[in-house]
Image (cartoon, rainbow over all chains, first blue to last red; front, side, top):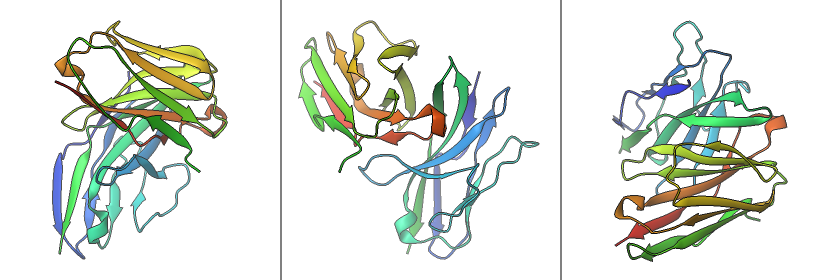
Length: 112
Length: 113
């Protein structure tokens, strides 16, 4: 079974403060981890994936297999970062198909 | 160019009615999905199709029936709508050969009254 846990439902920080959104996962194989973002009333869009190891909009996330974590970090939060953030995990299932399992999401609010 | 498009964007209907939501993707992806986002913003997969073949059916009531006429389309038909079906339904697609990155539609907000 694959499971994604985001322990914080809500996270509120001030502009310019560092932010960390936590994500822990459970999966028996080698997972592929993602962070998706959903701005108010918009579609989900991919923010970053662990295999690309890139920084998007100042966000980074490192896969820690020992701690089974994939926390999302940004050193200086901006008001436009306010959104719902979902951590997601995929594992190979049923041949060529992938199943994305999402965490319950963390609503980030960046206050001015 | 919209990659994954769903219609309608909003749907308000009475209990007991039957309704359909349509989804189309122009990305050439082989796999399409339906996700349900409930009032607490929890996202859960409902169905997955790969090249018109049902791959994943995640304990969804029989009132929900997906149909994939071709690999670019995945429609969702719901019979005998119930109040608990009220949610935002997201269609998504991915190309397995390029990993599990999924591209989402804008969502259909279904309200059952």
